Image 1 (cartoon, rainbow, N blue to C red):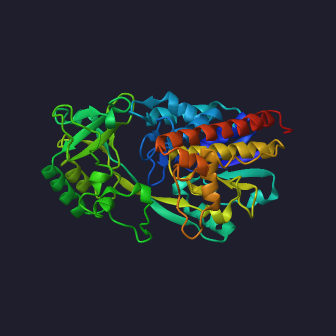
Image 2 (tube, one colour; image 1 turned 90 degrees about the vertical axis):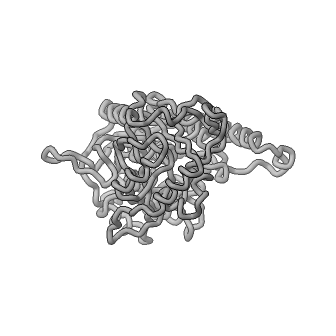
Image 3 (cartoon, rainbow, N blue to C red; image 1 turned 45 degrees about the vertical axis):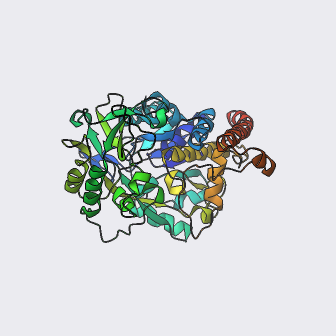
Length: 455
């Protein structure tokens, strides 16, 4: 059985490389392409490369016994190709895993090109009907910018309509234009290395910035736009309108970022994170927005240290499309009504880079199992991967929204243990220990079966 993967973002390449690793012949489709010397792109992408990161360059925390760390540890144990490349292209980012986005994408593209089992097809897929003859297994990993034609096809297959919210991209600034006399390097609470540039604000500076932000002119909305933002990725101007101090308890939180030059904690702080190993550009952490570019330049240059900043990329907005997963897919990510079609990545209802790669990895594993005649058990509920999959397949359908991995999704400890252990960090450590043991037992049984399968 041939595996067809649709989408060249994060989940698609991960699914393709995973399925190929276990002996499957894979067709990888990507609609971004060059035609007559001109690139055909999406509203958010700037290249035709695989694995292009359009928002942040961070794959979240690497602090032991955090939920994002646990998810990545499980993925490493299963041999995630993209996570291996992320580790190889990491840039200093304190306790987070951030990557040089250009090098990361280059390595993904090279790995796909070098794999003899993967054939790349640069064209838009508009129909899934042919998969009903069961000669192929399809993984739809088209992400937040699924084309209109394929969206209509998915709507036809599911019969229920699918949802959409809007996600935003943070600005990137040229490092040479940052006034280093006005900023300082630090990591919050001195955890990890001091890799973030911190732009400190006095109360007066913050008030001036805040007033300019909430009155700035928004980018023009299209007639078809209905702005339903994901709560975990609100544009900064939307967040600011919730109250004057909202930003000071969110992306501009100064706690744990004492200015070493004064010994004091600023009123507010804007953090900048490296975009690449050369450290020639930085992104404004948490500053995704939907303002006109001229307005962005005016407002952001009110940040201390950025008065003369040159912005390599302004913030912008793009559509994020996803299916109502709990109503439509099973624990193997397959459509219940069409079990030879699976979904992976953000379109299946996970949120975030790491989570998208994780879903792609699982979809590739399950596709390989089906192709090689192996009957897999679903990833255990007690693991981070299993908890994420359990959420997207069992959440309340009426209020379903994409989710990041958090401890809220993981199975709680037994009641007796919770009563005995009050310390949250110790509870999290025990949850991680239990999850990793469950994952290793599951993978230790499944991996040899995949390699020895009938196919």
